Image (tube, rainbow, N blue to C red):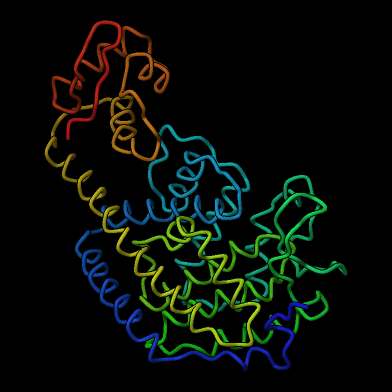
Length: 372
């Protein structure tokens, strides 16, 4: 019979790790972190906000995707822009569940120095499920789970499910969370900030205090610990994006640790290495932000209409939006609501001013790319 770590008496005091194994990945993560924060310090306000918005949007999209929830990228970016006070021109009103997720991610990272309380956690979980439903299932929202049946993480078809993890009984959750929050308040040593993030993630998701949303909250708590470690709300990397790309490894090491006896070196090693990879991946995102700024500086002084600015920005974000086939007159008219004739005229103006370049070919298949 499987025994989980929480089934040992006084189980959280059993956490232990081999510091000699953690020193190399911790040092590697710190080196990349220092380089990244140095680049971030030189971005300035406008570019810093651009990088922050891109990272928060990636965080929201991927932390949901890890749990199999697909969100509309434009709705996510709209919510992030509204939260950060950026332009929302051309973006839709965000859906309630999307706005709730973004609210949680922003609150965790921008208010990292404020106390983490049961009320705050319950508010985050409630924001994820504004209708009180997870899919078609009615769930307890804004409070610890209440069900008497075991809380299990399973996969596979009905009748042949594989149980990956079983959480502590619901009657234990309030006491377990009291211990977790007391530890969170006391574990403030900045020299161990990265380990604190990894341990907080593991501890919270092992208690599994809510009926749904636990993975998303665990990752938000880890991000909050990382923001506190850096003493900055400027998010330059997305841990959730990296976890999503390593999802199988994430669940495998998490499962082995939760079925263990309190030895968590393997989990912390993986967490630190994943964090380093997330930071390295974000260097490419910073290059995109800086390239976008350079693009606008190169073409400074050119007069564009609101429609043209909207289209140019969408093309600059083409990698995320999947702008297959380049820009055509039909796509321009669809995005802006302009007539075909107006779209054709405004595209020609963008080409003349150097914002766009025509792709090879022509005639009815004429299309355009951003002129980087």
